[in-house]
Length: 376
Image 1 (cartoon, rainbow, N blue to C red):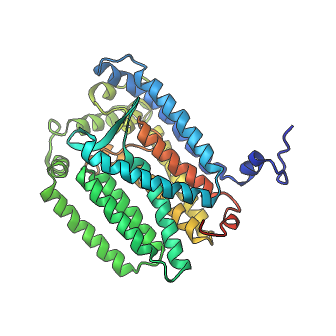
Image 2 (spheres, rainbow, N blue to C red):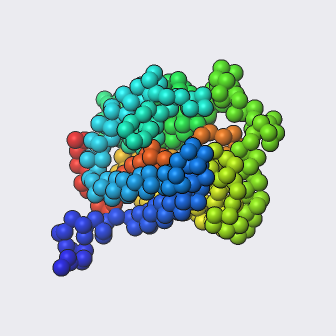
Image 3 (cartoon, rainbow, N blue to C red):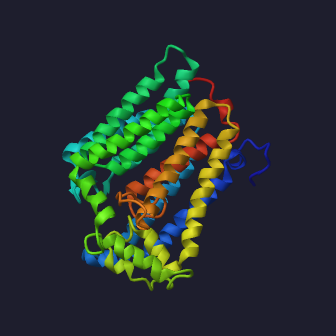
């Protein structure tokens, strides 16, 4: 019989007493909501491509099981193991990102995916949490060792990633990488004046993207000037929220999933609003807020700079991606083709989120800072 006292030397028991249970159980709750919504939304999409009703559901259950395994496995690791995995993963995923730019397949004017047996992979989804942890390590090293140019190396890697993302083009993911990277630099001591200059540069950059990237210009024009015919998916999504009202039309009773091709991915929030109403939308928002706020509160107590930079970066990435997806569905910003973490269908999205949460659980474990004695 396993002794579950705090003094036990059993690895699982020690994990249980040091893991942040709030983040863990909220993440599992979001995964459960995602399965429910996928069961609702994906059969209609499957029929449109000539597959059986359970085609996407079967694949999503496999992705969810892999994601849960990833979360639990990563949460057992020590800080130096998380760093090593991130550095190795960064090299591999950067190679895959280059392959995607030149040999990936194109969907809706963007080349973001590569084909693998049984699935398509979007390397940028997996690279996001990996880059955040690598950046946290580099910025921490720059603080510890005056001779180590960690911030310059991180900036160079960031510039390389942005260049590769804009080749696809993937403006939404570029903006997300940029926002999180600037936040980490600010935490590392970047003067507020430079933050302002970078913000101004980002605004000018958006103007440049508007004039030089037709794909981005089309999305912005549809958001600003498009009617329901030219902005078909947004029009149907807004109708879905209106039809759902407070309590929803009921499970399986919605029609938006029959009309929108991306109902199970980019617009799954609209499916939730139509069939389950405002209450489920508010629950989803609240669960994301719990993870972000909980992580930020933990970071305020942190004395290990690597842990603090990584915690804030991972939480900001998760929260911002959720905001972008939900705001796009509500017609508060142009559509970005960005999934809702935990909930949207897709292997890359789920595995990328699992990496974020697994690493977040690993670095927020109690007494992890005492394990972090060296850079190895």
